[in-house]
Length: 162
Image 1 (tube, rainbow, N blue to C red):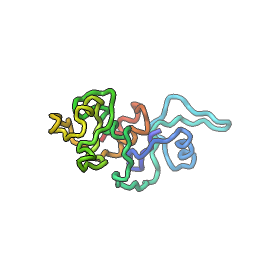
Image 2 (image 1 turned 90 degrees about the vertical axis):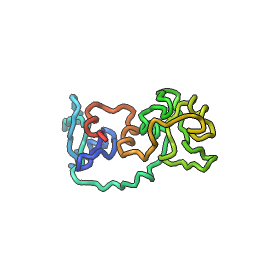
Image 3 (image 1 turned 120 degrees about the vertical axis):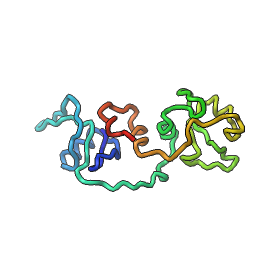
Image 4 (image 1 turned 180 degrees about the horizontal axis):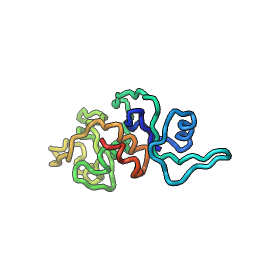
């Protein structure tokens, strides 16, 4: 389930069970529901797909503390090699190699297909005759929604526009 803040900003993904608990405690409301319902011994409830918290929850904006993972880099880069545009055999590449002082930061790591990563090796992109399709950057919070959910339901799309 997609969890929205009171301001309709996407903040998390949770299980159906957690969503139902938030609904029963009246801490959230259903924004989008599935066609089928959940049945308990004494109650029937619409199966939530998107819920919104009733009160605003302050979320720290310090995305630099978000852990850099391969899946997060791939999601940020739209599962595409940032050198040639390939969408398979992806690895991560340090634009400025660590051996040349490059950091393991969002601004220095990109998705790269294995052939491009081998071709670039321990060189800078210009030294290898390669060019990035776009400069790496710290991702927005919706990237982490894409990491948490392998597939994005169509009901979520309108809330994830970046």
